[in-house]
Every structure is written in structure tokens, then in C-alpha cells.
Image (cartoon, rainbow, N blue to C red; front, side):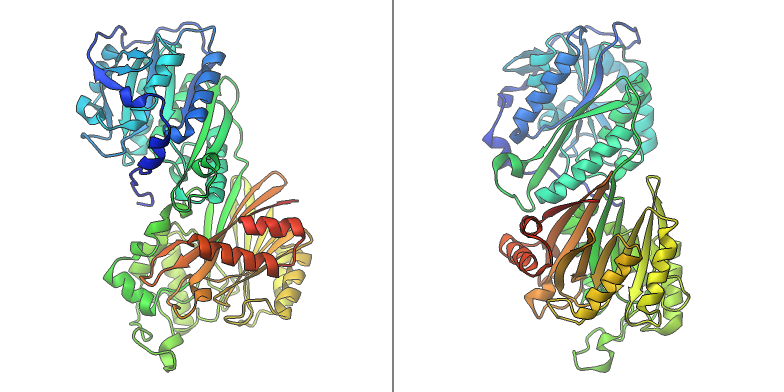
Length: 586
């Protein structure tokens, strides 16, 4: 499955601040509610999402106080508090408890009758002991007591593996048996283990999906509790609270004033009230460089597994509408002729990728589309190309850029926007003028045109004049974004007519360990909403083990500084490049 269950860490961060949560403990007492549906005074807010990471205590306080103020004319008698099951304790997809809880704000009584009835539905297990370590519940109970002092609590821990159809079924049960004195709280942190700029792009996508109440899209988001998010959305929808109002969006790096590369946690808050849901507005894309799965990479996948290569950056691929890379060779059943060869041997540059391992790698990372317009796609002639196209099609992976059959572009419909991907391959017989003509053609039937250009000189750290001429030609023809590949190193950026050009992202997955420039690469995340493009430059690094990681701070800063110095952009844009984050108003 695409999503991995990742346990929350960062205990040192949690220990830096606390709202007397260490004093929370379970006690015994009598519940005083029934499992029924008695409608009462309508709440202004029926549900909301809050962090549980206590670095964000001010954000937690803010959302609880805002919801309490919104509902000041109503009495909250029940709180359904949903959290991820961080440590996979207990049994079943969803677990509840009818215990009472001692906090420094006073005793929070368990909603025993409601919980007992819930446990009889077959969807929820009643297991008090499983809650002993669950900070997703315990960290928020003092806030529940402070702001909703009369409320009984019905806690729920849910596993990532909770099937979507069962999540929907549970949401219906919760909504059917909740009166309008019931408040639903999702305790969840969002983006994990990345870097603050990427986390912010992921947060913006999460807010867009929450606002659209898009149950299916939730499964792609960078959050520690997808089933909980789906429960929140379904519950709110059924109860008639469809208007999501986002409040604070931040991250631990921003709060603590340090960029915690690989350890950052992000937070999103907001609440549902009466009103209409919004349409999806955010379009997010992530671009990667050259993907080569033969030679040492093939050997590594056979020895470790295809998942090993990107397991340290797996969440980087979450949240985007599309992840796109250049597939630097064909997928065939042929035996590799390049494994074990030396650089000077004739088959060293003849690639073929194993179908099973290639698809496992692509599916695991979440690559949605690949460009096949490059100088290696015909390494096993037309038969290898055709087999590549067949394997990609059978596995629902989009592709474009065939140098043989004229399939040089692909149009995808994303959130009611048409995005065209056009290939330019300097090694094919389709010249730049023909590519410009194709761009003009697709411009008339799409909202955004992305050109993947396979061009330039290998290992050259700066663009050559022909790249610049063709990039300008393509933008003049209607291209909106240009992504370059082939040089195997990262080349500068340019803004031309307010359009972004990445002359080369460098490698993505390769076995070129002979220089720091070939091991240090760039991922480009682009978020488009209304007339604003937000662009994140995320340096990556391929370790000698073959694993890809977020580039360590020294390497990250060195790459961004080089790009800032060499890119044809103004002073403010250079400063943005150094920070890894730029914006372009269209």
C-alpha cells in the first residue's frame, strides 16, 4: 500500500512544552449519557481538527478557544475524540475506552453508555489498556476539560489500515447517534519527517481537501491519521456542517525557529460549520529528475527491495495531485546487459528495467506519470519501447514522450483543470519547432502546459545556449513550466515571461556515485491556486548505500547558494532560491 505506518517520534520536542498532560491518568466513574439521537440547540461548530504535538500548544489553545467561543450559546455534552493509534496497541481497526481521566483541569468522565453501545456495533473494540500510551488522546483531554467542562468523552483510536468503506459506516453510526450537543474532535498532526517548505505545500493541499470534503482525496494527504480525517469529514457532512474554516497552519520548525530537516512536524487547524463546501482549488505537482533502475540500482533492489531506495523520504511523495519523473530506459523482460559492466565497456549504457521491481518501486513512491522521451528509451529498440508502454498502461501509470509513435504529450484532468505534459527530446527526430507546434496545439485545450525537456550537456553545471533558446521558444509557444533532465547534475533556474524554467533537476535515482554533483539532486514542488504559483526547491542526496535522503544542511545550502548565484532571476528571487521557496504571481 502507498501509505506507510510511521510511528510518531520527537519526544524531545514534546518534552519542551506541556499543558500538565503528564498528570492525565484514567480513573473510574459513572457515565451519564445514552446512545440516542435527541436533537437540541444547534451548534455553530460541530467538529474541528487540532494538533496533539505539544510544541504546538498555542495553536491547540487557539483552536479550542475559538470553537468554544463559537459554541458559547450551546452546551457541549459529549466530545468524540479521535486519534491515530500511534503504537498499534490493542486489536481491531478502531478502539475505544469507557474510562474516566484525571487531568490537572479536573476529571474528564467517560461517556460509558455511548462507548458501550458503540463497542457492540462490531466496528469498535472496547480496550481500556490500549490507551495507556496514546498521547493523541491524553494530550488534548486537559483542553477538553478546560473549554467544554460538562462534556463526557468518547475516545477513539483508529489504525491506518481501517478500510474506507468501514470508516464511512462508522461515521454514519456516530452521526446517527449524536445529538446537536455532540462535538467531534480530530486529534492529528500533519506533515512529518520532511522540511518546512514542503510541509507548508502539503498543509495547503490538506486545507483544500478539507474545504472540499473530498473523502477520497484524503487518502493521499500527509497526515498521521487518514481514517480519522475521513471520519471527521464524513461525520461533518452527514450532520450538515460542510463549510470548513481553516485557522492556524504552522510547523515545528517555524515555532521553534530552526529548520528541522527530516524531523519537522506540521499542524493544521480549522472547524466545520453550517454552509456549503468549496470546490477543490489547489493543484499540486512534484517533479523529479532521471530515474534509472538498472546496473547497481537493479542489484540493490534485488538485494534489499525496491522500497529501500526511498524509504527515508517516503512522505515527500504524499499529498501532491501528481508526482512526475523521467524514466531513463525501457521496462522489458530482457536480462540486464549492463549489470557488472565497467564504464568503458560497450553495454554499460544499455539499460533495461525489470517489470516487477520497476512497478513496485513506482507504485511505492507514488509516481503517477513518467516521461519516456530520452536517449535510453530505445536501448532495446522498438520492442522494448512497446513493452514499456504496455507495462505502464497495465499498471495505470501515465506516460508521454514516445520517440516512435508520436505520443509526445499527455493531458490529465485534475480537480477540473486540464494539465498537459509535453515532451521535448533533443535525441529524437522531433525538433524544437515541431515541439513548439505541439505546445500551441495543447495550449488551446488545457489550463496548464508542462514541458519535460531532455537536453543539454552531461555533467555541465550550467545551461548551454541552445537550452535557453529552446526554453524561450517553448514559453513563447505557450508553455507554463519547463522541467529539464539529462545532464545528471542540477542546473540553474530562469524566470522568463513570468514562467519558471528548471534547466536540469539532475538525477533522481541513479548509480553515479563518482561526484557530489551527481549525488545531489533537486525535487521541485509546485502548488498552483488562483493566480499564484508557490515553488519549493527541495535538495535531495543519494547516499552510497543507494538510499535517497533530504540533503544534509551543508549540502542543501551549498546547492541552493550555487543556484541562486547562477540563475537568471532578480535579487528577491535569488533570496527565495537560497531559502528554497519562491512565488510567482501569474
